[in-house]
Image (cartoon, rainbow, N blue to C red; front, side, top):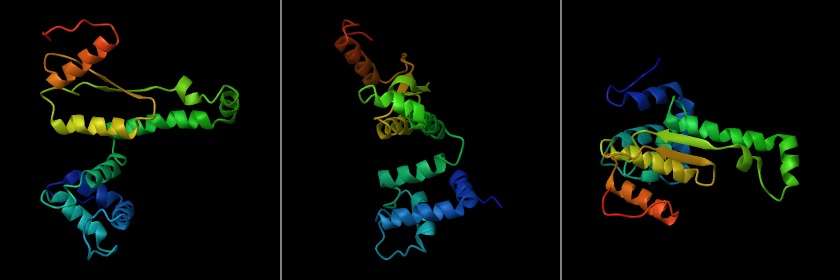
Length: 186
C-alpha cells in the first residue's frame, strides 16, 4: 500500500512505491560517502537517508549535491518538468543512434544529428520573478547546468516583476549583441 508520513507525503509515497530503487539510491550515496555517517552500514542507509533528508539540521539535508540526488530520484518517478526535459533530451541521443543518421553525419566533419535536428525549449513563466520562490530558479539553473552541453534552452518572461539581476543580465546580453542601447531605466 502507498504510505506517507503525514508531513512529507510525496517523498514518503515515492519511497513506498519504489522501495528497491530507494534502497539502491541510499546504498550508492553511502558508497560515495555522501551520507556523512561513519558508523552507518549499507543496510541502515535507506532509513538514515530519509530521516536525515527530512531533518533541516542534518548534514544530509544541508549537502546540496545529496539533496539534488534525492530530488532527481523523486522527480524521475513522478510527472515533473525535470522528467519531461530529461526525456526530451533523449530524442537527440536516439536520433544520433539511428545507423543511417550516424553514417550520414560521420561523412560531414564531426557534426552530429543532435546539432542539426534537436532543440529542447524549457519555457518557464515564473523564472526570475520576484513572486516566485528562490528555490524554483535554483532548480531551473541547476538543471540547465547539468545539461549545459546539450541543446537545452530556457525561455522566460521578462516583466516588471522580474528580478533586477535578470534585467541586468538581459540588458548586458542585448548590448553585447548590438541590439540595445543601455540606459538608466528598465
